[in-house]
Image (cartoon, rainbow, N blue to C red):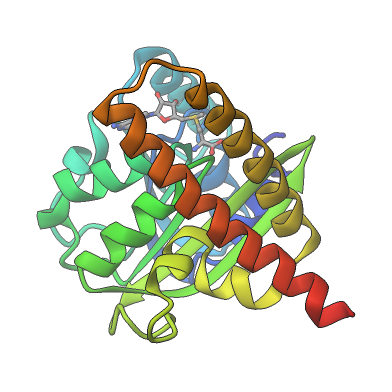
Length: 243
Ligand code: SAM
């Protein structure tokens, strides 16, 4: 991956960045995404935010060596704290856990006034993001799931709107866990991801069966039973549709 050729994962994020927008890429590391978007004239201006010194320096180096310092401002800081109000109209946050992404959005809520689109790519725990979006009046408008180098990634795209829109009534729990758009399409990567999760939950459940009984163990087992039932419903539904 470099500033000319993105990984399939980051290309899936880039695809949802509106053309002509001012983007804040939070947790930018090498700044590959903002450099790519500027070089391809998809956007006019970007802020690359990084909280760790090494990745911040690496972003700065790449932006300078590409001659893009007048179009990409590289800033060191935690989450959306690097932004001034009204500076960005699209925020991208990629390559982190869903809980961390949701936490960054929660901590930086007051910076979201001018932001029209969020493009979020959690490596795990997308449910935390869907829940945050729902509770904060952001409407999920698209989702992607891709497999690259044996790993499966989700991309969530949201705009301000009616947060309940994509979810079928009475199906909120299932929609939040699996993703309302991904659930409709059930692509191969989706089936693979949830098949693996199902096996993992089953294995943890079996380990808990032989653990000393406690309230926490019982609660964890109950949570796993619920998830296993939901996964079975979603994946078996697919089989019955094929039959
Ligand atoms: N976004 C790039 C990508 O998708 O390829 C880099 C992903 S890298 C795995 C995650 C980056 O996020 C790291 O460089 C890390 O230092 C940065 N990061 C983690 N928490 C952050 C925060 N609260 N604010 C800004 N950057 C953060």
